Amino acid sequence: MKKHIKIVPHRRKREGDTDYRRRLKLLKSEKLRLVVRKYNRNTIAQLVEYHEGGDKVLATVSTRALLKYNWKHSRSNIPAAYLLGLLLAKKANEKNCKEAILDLGLHTSTKGSRLYAVLKGAVDGGLKIPHDKEILPNNERLTGMHTKNKEEISKSVSQIREKIMKG
Image (cartoon, rainbow, N blue to C red):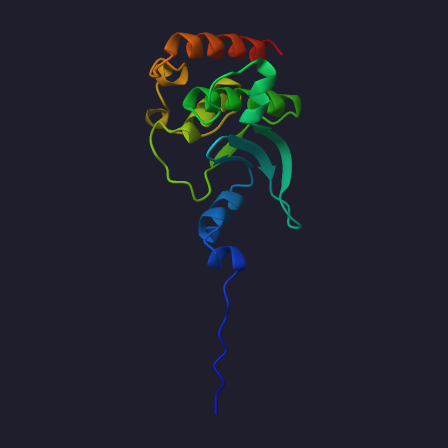
């Protein structure tokens, strides 16, 4: 009598945490990955390099870092995500990282979302990341002109952007 052996998939696949086909495509490019993850109150961006023993994180920035720049608004909006991308690009330039590819993980790709605001900030900061310009949020949304307190946010974005770009 034959015994049937059931092969159990990886834990992260079972739990729906990793799409291994998409991850394999990203890893085959042999480029750094700009990993963007969004949460209820914050957004996190990392530059990650693949190694067989485990991925190596070269730079990490969270929207919490904006508090050092006197950001007094929501950390989960599009202007905060844009500034996060600028901060990450600054850290990447310090470590001689010039290009990467975008890794959104299991997040749904939505045109103009805060995930793409991080991408826009990273590109404006000097990283070369392949993308379609139509998917990026427009400048009105990046500067916060679509919000209720648009003057305050727009002023904060421009001031912080200048501080980040100056170093």
